[in-house]
Image (cartoon, rainbow, N blue to C red; front, top):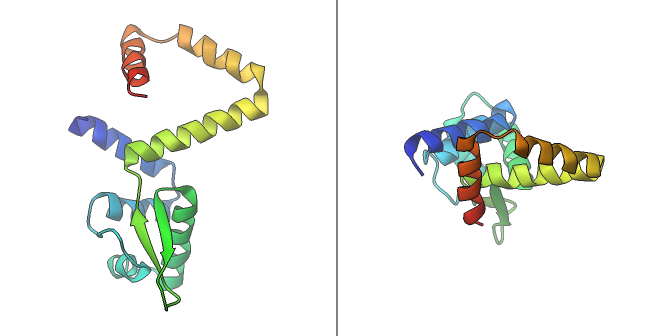
Length: 135
């Protein structure tokens, strides 16, 4: 993947998140906080926020998928690990949203997707074929 695509994936992935979630994921995806990490590692980088605010937000990020959580043996703390790149997070989110649209609208959604395929530019068609081959 080229640098421009990586920057675009990062921008899009951060756009799917709330403002605080995006601040935290920017720290993680940029490598400014190592993985695995504990909430204190993030809180130390975001001193303007209460520890409990950071803790709640990191927990929500684990529920959304880019992080996993694991209880630390013998402590109340959790250790978190970054498990999705921005591109992987985008792919997972788009699959989930597409499934929700089809579940909500049924055949009407499938017809809308098919109509959209007819509107693709030649460049978009070529990209789609490349992406299809990567599955």
